[in-house]
Length: 93
Image (cartoon, rainbow, N blue to C red; front, side, top):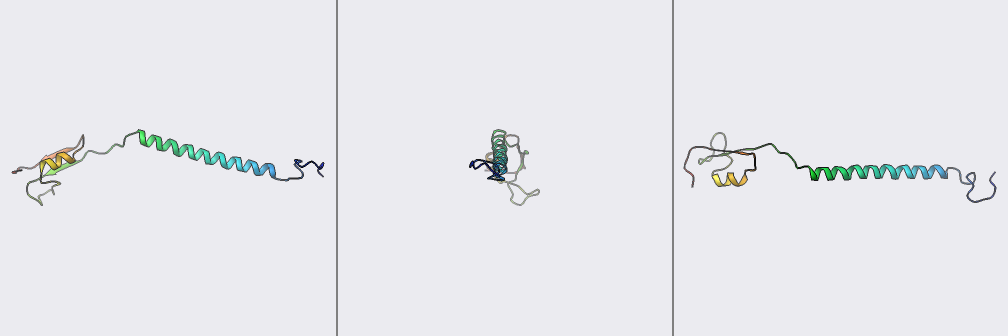
C-alpha cells in the first residue's frame, strides 16, 4: 500500500507508461513532420527534369504526322530549351 504521498507510483498505477506512450507518439509525429519537410525542401530545390519535345509545323492543317502548329512563331514560342521544331515545306505567313 502507498505511503499516503500523492506522487507515490503505487497510488497512480500506469501513469508512467501513459506518459511514455505520449512521448513516443509525439516523437513519431515530429519525425514524420521532419521527413515531410525535408521532402518538400528537396522537391523545391531540385528542378524537375522533363523529356525534350518534338514540335511539328505544317502550313496545311491535318498533315501527317499531325502538326502541332501551323505557324512557325507559335512553335518557337512553345518550345523550351532542348526541344526540336520540325518545319515541313510550305508557305508560312
